[in-house]
Image 1 (cartoon, rainbow, N blue to C red):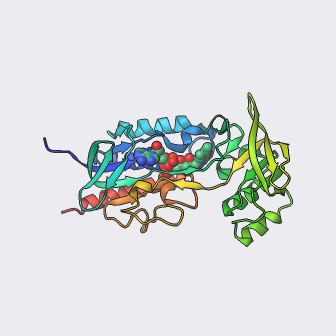
Image 2 (image 1 turned 90 degrees about the horizontal axis):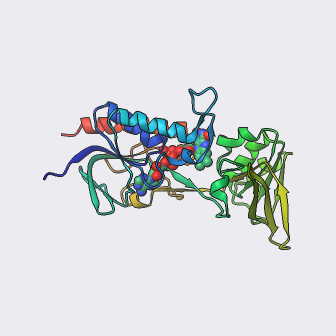
Image 3 (image 1 turned 45 degrees about the vertical axis):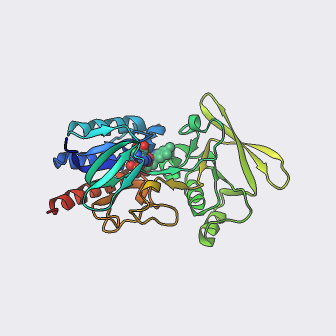
Length: 309
Ligand SMILES: Cc1cc2nc3c(=O)[nH]c(=O)nc-3n(C[C@H](O)[C@H](O)[C@H](O)COP(=O)(O)OP(=O)(O)OC[C@H]3O[C@@H](n4cnc5c(N)ncnc54)[C@H](O)[C@@H]3O)c2cc1C
């Protein structure tokens, strides 16, 4: 039996991957998309999404991803629920493996996202979207005039704290060390914000919650070992992301943090291999920007296929 060579294999079913699927399916390319561990991607672990255009009153993250999946399937996208474990992207026919299963493709769109790092405290997964967040741009609005804390000491922690200070009544920045990885200008900007107070060097040791969600956080002074409880409405982790690029590294360039480098929109250094969404975007990390890149990757894959001999 001749092995099928797919026109387009998409890795990841977040907003980037599913948008690529909708576009390539409507271009008659019969895409196949692999969902991995988290079908629907990061929005499946949140509640209200209020900044996805078209929904006056917002939409629940899982519902948005369910609808996007149905839309991709309506045009003939085939969804597989395996994790891609290995790839060989060299040459005109690319090979991907899901365990022992071999998949052949003319083009590959990588849309595997970047996972927000968490502290690993007990109960984190249940509190996500109920007082705990990894994205101030996404969730800050829910905490207008409320008291929040940000954990982290890098540029993104300063940026999130400064952003939240425009919305919230009080922002506490918790950092484990008394030196910061943040650039001096970002640190200064946060330090100049009246609403931000710094707690350093403090470790975040426990979240406190009731049936509605997070109510407080326990932090430990690393000089005195004293633990204090701060009542809060929201806690934001800003301790970085891990781009899911590991298995692709021999075939794409990545930056110091592991984000895939793209040029001319979504092209990687390997012809026929495109990257879209958070995996290739260290800056914005929003559903709408991920979907936008997914559209670009789909059209670029389509053009690549049209130009094959
Ligand atoms: C709690 C939370 C709330 C958020 N709220 C908002 C919001 O309100 N508005 C907004 O615009 N953005 C929000 N975001 C950010 C938004 O979710 C991301 O920017 C967006 O999901 C990125 O889309 P993506 O398609 O690039 O990747 P992701 O959504 O991360 O999807 C990655 C996909 O790749 C799959 N995958 C990974 N590795 C493999 C593999 N080896 N094989 C197969 N599949 C694989 C995963 O299973 C997943 O399906 C939020 C994020 C979080 C965590």
